[in-house]
Amino acid sequence: MLEHFIPQVNQLTSKGTAPGGKLLRYGYLGVVMLKLLGRTDVKITAIGIGTWQMKRDDNSVQVIRKGIEAGSNFVDTAELYRNEDMIGKAVADLDDVFVATKVSPTHFRYEKVLKACDGSLRRLGVKQIDLYQLHWPNPHIPIEETMRAMERLVDEGKIRYIGVSNFDLDELQRAQESMKRYEIVSNQVEYSPFVRYIEKDLLSYCEKEKISVIAYSPLKHGHALESLSRERNPFAQLAESRKATVPQIILRWLISKGNVIAIPKTSHAERVVENVRSQDIELSDSDIHELDEYASRLNSRSTKDRLGGITNFVLRFFR
Ligand SMILES: NC(=O)c1ccc[n+]([C@@H]2O[C@H](COP(=O)([O-])OP(=O)(O)OC[C@H]3O[C@@H](n4cnc5c(N)ncnc54)[C@H](OP(=O)(O)O)[C@@H]3O)[C@@H](O)[C@H]2O)c1
Image (cartoon, rainbow, N blue to C red):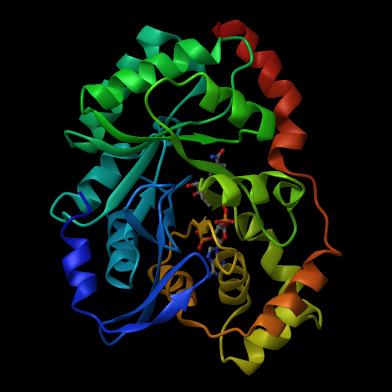
């Protein structure tokens, strides 16, 4: 699906390197930061478009198209979000958008993975899913069984790449070891200035193994913005001095990490442009260091930490 995006980007003038990728001038709008997906040669913009809680309506279609026009080539959804058909509609006439979806952990048995994939293909209206991710680990189903189905889907051309989501380091390693022919290209995990548990070991492991980290809830569902905008802190100060917004500084800080791609969600056209254009904000190494320092003092529990126990309990009924 991405082939047409690359020539379009190649016509643009190179503007230097970005952490883990390339900076390219994007028409009159500014700069896009491209990152390689895992060990593949697929180039994804550092800001993608998250779609959880986006309705299946025309506004959502317009927001997604606006985000793509502003310089994003990556849209993330899931069968659980019940909006794959809307995403399919938004990108139907665009060859250059990379679409990721997810199979729910209730569908990790071999036959169920295959069936879930057919459902996503049908709703998205595509012949191939660019990135198919395991949404959340299911400890009650052998990962070998799930991965066997995922590998078959690649062999059949129904999916292009395999990713996981919410996998801790040991879960990621086990998932990779259980595969025979393909590699995991990405792990989608919660990451924001407030939720930084992946910095303990997962982020550096993924960097070393060339696994892309797709940062979800990068604005902490919007909760990050109020406190960071209100108080004097480097996020607010840099926003002021760069004539940017706090969400833009948060996103720019996240994508300064080599292998991180962030996927903020918004249902507002002006905000999707704001978020996508955060790629264009210039921050120096010392700015990033200052943001790192400040973020190291913030600490909220991750969604996985809060909901992991109950999710595992519920998943017992979907063995
Ligand atoms: N794999 C997983 O388990 C998992 C879990 C959660 C999320 N995700 C993915 O990650 C995506 C993003 O995460 P999220 O939706 O949880 O949270 P988020 O992107 O951190 O925050 C979204 C919230 O921030 C607001 N917002 C966005 N841009 C803004 C801006 N520029 N200024 C002010 N407010 C802004 C949005 O409000 P408005 O919509 O009103 O603008 C929305 O309420 C999801 O959509 C989904 O694709 C994956």
